[in-house]
Length: 251
Image 1 (cartoon, rainbow, N blue to C red):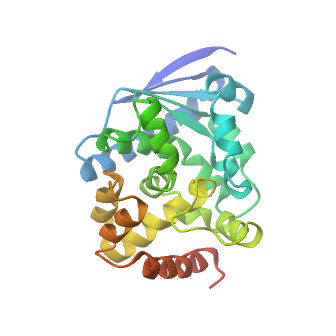
Image 2: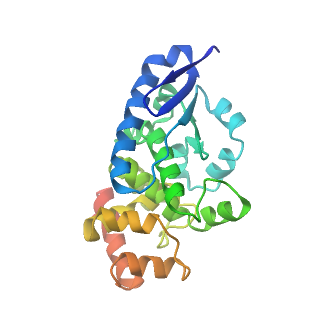
């Protein structure tokens, strides 16, 4: 494989020479996402390098913890674990590999093609939330695991993936039993964004920014009560389940 480099105003890419045209589209999408996120968050890192891999095997060699992350994810959400991020670098499948990973379900391809944007959103969330990575330390990684629904959910929501996950969410609800609220670590990669989607509908996007930017010392319940304007977690739980049903077409 012949590695080459491409650049936009604030991003750099390393990729196979045969992917140059597709990578230009990825860089355009990342620039557009950065403009949008800059309007929402105080800090939006630039000079980020995106490394695009032509196969899952190559991606896993570069980011060996990614297979472990996929193993900890419910089956319906595993295909959407398509990359990893650091403070200044994203590793993700190249567009052609993302297309091959997509299922035949409606929205699957669209959600996967947004994977680079979702990974950049994760960097932005980490830059604005001092308790979440990057940088990755033992403590920040532990918090990332405990607060996976918030970290991964914010990335899904701010990248625009949530509307494209309708079929996958429906599969999860049919096959995986009743999900916890907030979503467990296994469900975070698929259902985390739905919490933010509900919050945006009820309290606005600024409430989503506030939720993503801090971890409540009182835990998940306290964070959710504050985000939903003091409403009890039990009440929000029921509203969220109705929202899941609407998204999946089951309600």
